[in-house]
Length: 494
Ligand code: SAH
Image (cartoon, rainbow, N blue to C red; front, side, top):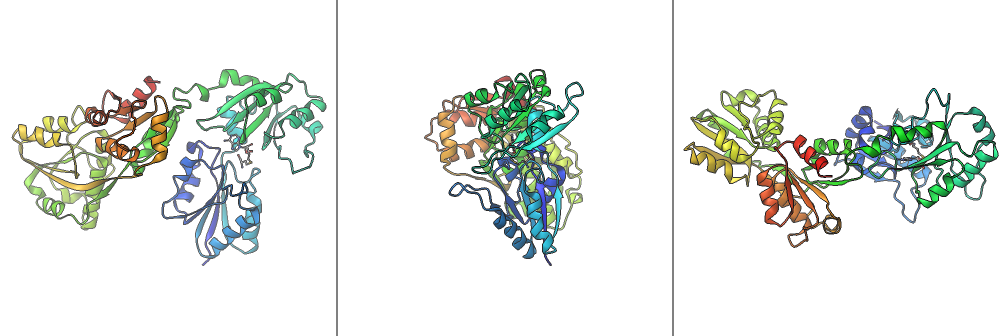
């Protein structure tokens, strides 16, 4: 059975601009073929076990030639694979999407196309330029400014000027002076508003505004580089009022997210929505202990306990794996009451249809231990090296507790030079820590002997902050242990 190829538009850069349908296709892919303009955050959404083929790599400064890409798509589909071809923006807008389908069509391979948000519209939009406005124009023209080597630009400037519409040029950075000259020669006014939006929709976005007459000089002065869109038309004048993206509170601010990969999403998405340049650097991963005789015997005697305490979403997941692995479901929990350390863990429970009977007012192990309204015995199912504060507090109150490890935290990215260099060389680099173990994982990545004095550890709670201070990391602590409070603190600190 031949497989299928899905051409997916990845959008212009902001990972939030990948469509739902595109994401679904990506998650089901067995092979992903992608190129240069697809953002790292979207590449991170590829299934790990899928085969990743980078055809945009500039080996000897040349990406893989188009006919080879076409052949790769065909070969993989004929092997029976479910192939996703990820392309920047929209695949059919100057994206050679059509060319890639021809060979497939000839061979009767089935394919689909998932349109993407094009940079031609989204980059101006993020730069505060609506590509049409009733007061300014009645048409939009998207033009390639690509110049074949040694050839003149093949653009009918007179026809474009006559439309009085908004003009958007893609692939036009190197031909910018010729484009502007062409429009001027065709009779467009030199004071027509114009703009360039570089790396649109990404944290590195820059908008350069000028007029048709001054744009080449202004862009050269600003050292504009590709990818960038050039916009010419009255709508460009609106950018001063509509420039929302540049005004986001964390615009361009780099924030390192150290949470485990599968949990980084919500924090990263919040920070990105505020304009941050999020660097996902998972420093820990959680691995359920399996087989685990201690969990087996505790679960078999669950009726002995009044409370089951869970101190992280990873703990809830490990519990679920255990239940599923034993052919059971939530009913196996019987009458035991459920305690969650905070709202994130409570949400993880409610995803399985269970309500937490107790969540402490302050979301940490000490408050859980101090506040849990227990008369009977407590079972804590948590990480191998969970905070001693929980058991200490319970012991102080003479409440019996079995502290059973159900998962292990492992450190990822050991001794990362890249992260170390960023930590040592960036003044005020913000690094988020959502648990004491993310701090330990981070330190194991960077190296304990690194100079942490320039960075700031943005900590979710006091225990996390204590851990960071042990390594000499300057810290700030969120007002409560939630992602909202952590995010607010980052915004306030900028
Ligand atoms: N299919 C793509 C365009 C591919 S042609 C789309 O629909 O967006 C490549 C050109 O797209 C680049 O030269 C640049 O002009 C533009 N481009 C792509 N991503 C961009 C971005 N993030 N910001 C500005 N321009 C971008």
